[in-house]
Length: 137
Image 1 (tube, rainbow, N blue to C red):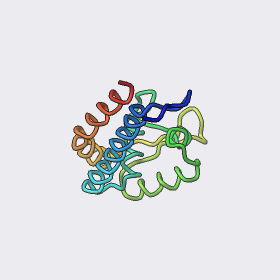
Image 2: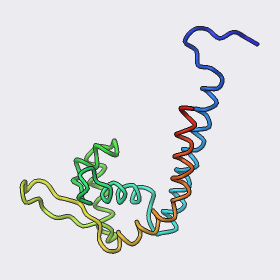
Image 3: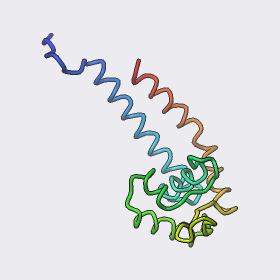
Image 4: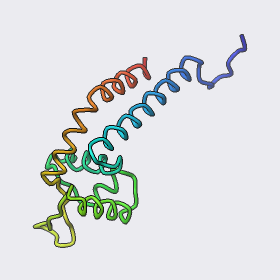
């Protein structure tokens, strides 16, 4: 067996990282499948998830907040929100504090499709949690 140089990852560390990436990809593919079966694109599902699961617990978010959390340009998120709004999944309301800011919230249709997808992904979330635990084992 070849000796490891100082600083190189162990085979076990690499195997755990590889297993995690496989689990992460399975989670992503499962999310794509479930979202599509609920009439959502994977991007819409993520948008609905981040709005519903807003950091402040308000179940609404601004485009700027979404752009930061999605690691996308604000213009990309604006277009995503526009498409989701045209599909009847989200609505915008003007901020009472700053007229330049609009808050995005789910419509009844968005709530229904999101909830169906979220429930269907329970097993995928459980499997991903297990993979995270194993990563640091």
